[in-house]
Image (cartoon, rainbow, N blue to C red; front, side):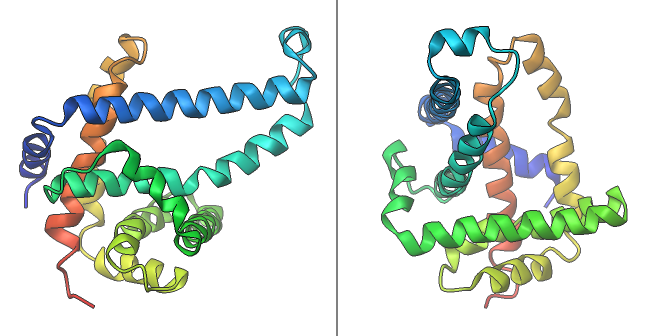
Length: 218
């Protein structure tokens, strides 16, 4: 399947869904921004101290790291939201928060993210290229986790690596093809990312749905 066909199918999936996906992107941006701002103000001892400080307090860095970990399941659920759009399941925005109702799945999402980060970092110590290759190999892990939540952290990572054999370059080029749109979004003071982000997410979900999901079924 050509990259142009993947992106076309993604645009077709987004027809009638743009208001919803732009709203979700904006909601996540506001949520993460408000949380980070509130943490820094709290750690600084108040709004006046925060305004006058010359550096970020260590407590703020620690709290932001903890919150980033807590938000991992939400970030993954958002990618699942776009996969549901590709599969024509008409998801609603509140659906992304339901991942927190399944503690086991939420913890597995966090654990998987941490392990991928560790593996990618260790490969990057060799050289940048091996790190990028491994990131591409692990890129389908969370989509596979959605379809196969019964798998363990390491089983899901291994399955992604296995299924991405022969597809890493295409996935790399797919994401690279958005770089021009990214520059245009910067010229729009970032507003364009409200539309570009859903487009990228949906294209990646389309890639998984058409090329990876059915490849050598478990």
